[in-house]
Length: 236
Ligand SMILES: C[S@@+](CC[C@H](N)C(=O)[O-])C[C@H]1O[C@@H](n2cnc3c(N)ncnc32)[C@H](O)[C@@H]1O
Image (cartoon, rainbow, N blue to C red):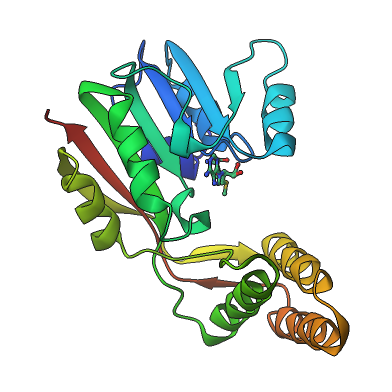
């Protein structure tokens, strides 16, 4: 039997078969693939990134899921229209300022009795990796006025959804430790340098050099931290 992937494990106790699902934050389409594999009746994948939307459409060329390019703060779905909502590695790319609006929207589009699965990362325990993400955030703060990444404790996201009528059902670990591979570290370093390059003068150069040094110190990758999965049911 093929080994079960992280996204498959996140939804293995969720009744996906036949359900209309919203994948909030389509990214590379990994959770969209797992939902389809688990027999979802329909999957609507939403992202605000044009390249991600195009990538997910290409990935499922023959049987395309609905991929919508939109901001989840105004999710383009009707009230009470989905039975499953997934947010796999979405919240770490959301600033604290927009989390409440997105949590409201994920709740609005969910039918009474719907399930919600939220997967994300605990704060990073490894000093060197935390330093790389801190440099990425510093560059993003200076270039765009907002951090690139925020690692919310599971208890924070649990409270955020319980306050909106979602009954907490379970928490489990999906990855422990998380394999932060060389490719992932390179991608983060590239994003950080892109932000730094939008600044002028010596600060840009200093930040770019700092990011490169921090990335190099992490070598072939680092296994650290935890990805958790929270499941809820909408009671109202
Ligand atoms: C790390 S990826 C998620 C990975 C994905 N769930 C998967 O399984 O492959 C985060 C996604 O959320 C999207 N995103 C971030 N903020 C958003 C917003 N306000 N509205 C819509 N999509 C957003 C990003 O563009 C990206 O596609």
